[in-house]
Structures are given as C-alpha cells and as structure tokens.
Image 1 (cartoon, rainbow, N blue to C red):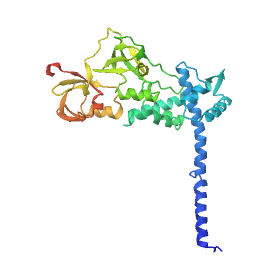
Image 2: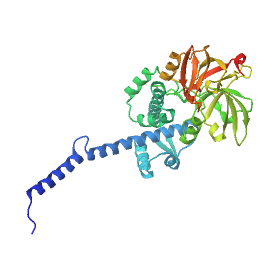
Image 3: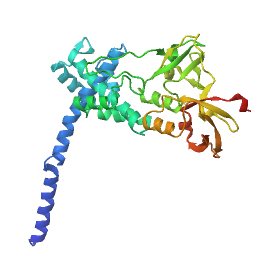
Image 4: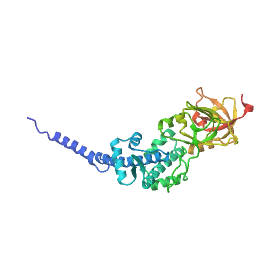
Length: 345
C-alpha cells in the first residue's frame, strides 16, 4: 500500500502550477505567444502575397495560385486560405485563374515595398552589415514598421528616390520613379553604359553577382555577347557572366561619342612600384564607410602607392599623404584610380 507523502504531493502541485503559469501567463505565456504568432503570420502572408503580386505586375507577368505557392515560403493551404480572405476584403480579385491587385491592394503593396527598400537603404548607409544580408533583414522589417515610423525613416535618410540596388522607392503617395536602362544581356558588343540597377531576386543569382564584386554605378564596355556568356570590362577588370545572371543587371547605355574612362581602375589592381592618383570612391561605398575613407585621405587627386603588401596581398598598406593605411581587398576595390604611367613598370 502506497503511503501518502505530502512533500511529494507539494512538489507535483508546484510543478503543475509552474507549467500552467508558463503556458498562460499574460503576454509572454506560451499560449499567447503562439496565438500572437498565428495572427502575425496571417498578416505576413497577406503582405507577402501583395508584394509578390506587385512584382509580377511590375514585370509584366501574370500570377496565379500555382506561381504564388512556388515563390512563397508558406504551406499551400495557408496561402489559399489567405487568398480567399484577401478576395473578401477586396485586396485582390480573380480574372479567370489570374490574380490581380485592386487599387486598395496595390496601395497596400506599395507601402510594403516602400518599407523594404527604405530599410535596405538604411542598412547600406547607416550600418556595416554585409549587403548579402540586406534583403532578408528588410523582409523582416517590412512587416514591423508603421506608416509613421516609415515616414520618419525616410526623412532621416533624406527621402531617397532609389534603394542601394537601384530599385525606386515609392513615395508616400505611391509614385514610383523609373529604372533607367536595359538588361545587360540585351546589349550588343562594343556597347558602353553604366550599371544602374542590380536585381536582388532570386537570391541565388544575386549572390553570384556579389561574388563577382560587380558594383552599381560602374561604367562598362561589352566585348562579347553570346548564348553561352557575356563578357564586359569595368574599372580595369574583366567579368564573365552567364546570360541568366547578366539579365539581372540593368545598364543605362552611354553615347559612344562620350569619352569612356577605361583607364580608370580599382585600387585593388595597383601593383608594387606603381603610383596613381585617386579619381574617386565608388557608389558601392556608402555612409560611414565612405566618410571614413574620405577622412583617411582617399580624396580625388591624391597620389597613392603601395607601402607594404602582406604575403596573401590582403590586406595591403597604401601610402596616402605620408601615412600608411591598410585596406582589405574588398575595400580597395571601391576606390577608383588612374595609374601614373611615368612611374609604372
């Protein structure tokens, strides 16, 4: 026969009470956290659908349920349930099997796009966060910021027209500037132009572009365009891309009568015993990073040479105004120079 143990019973009671408290305590209890997350997820799905429909519409493509379930990271049944809800609330409507935005839905989608692109601009200008992380972080914040907070952020950034990828940022009234240029993949051999936009979706292609160290604002010249590859020169370097990757680069063609400064190269290309003059800093270097380079003396017209090169050539110390300053290769690639041929080998 089991003997009743009041201490043991008390411990069981305390344990059960603790679990109940952890589950149901106000705000932070597991029950409320899960409930709030479910509510947040519904809002997130609605906004992600609106944004995707906007991108489909803006690129001249049509979207249906199948195409949406293919690009969104939610379970199919959840997407379908939310689409039904959005139809009832007149954010979207069906035209056959094609999904289209209503005027209300389009206005809402532009607000989401505005937050996303402003946050990417903020990350580029005000933080040292790597560009590979901008998109994902902006994806999270686009569901968080209120309209008032978004307008405050825009004001803080000086009401920018374009994000760091060259995408236009919608205004509060929903006006969107145009991206100037054509896809790099459509340019003929010997065409010259300036990169005005780098598409950051799909992520796998964007990461290839980042890995190639291709910069927005760079002046380029196409030397080969075939079904297999596209080759172009930019800032003294040769780049080879598959056409599917090149299609994610928008280039504004330049008049061939304009002098093309092909002798402008990246500081990272400078060799020992060569001297050069700084032409400027690439648009790829922004915010605090750009100001720091300027403060260190990397200003237009300044003479520069290699002072000390590490065994792996990264970092390299450069002599600027009598001071030796070490830069990593990716930092040096954002400083543009012209070699002094009279001092080169």
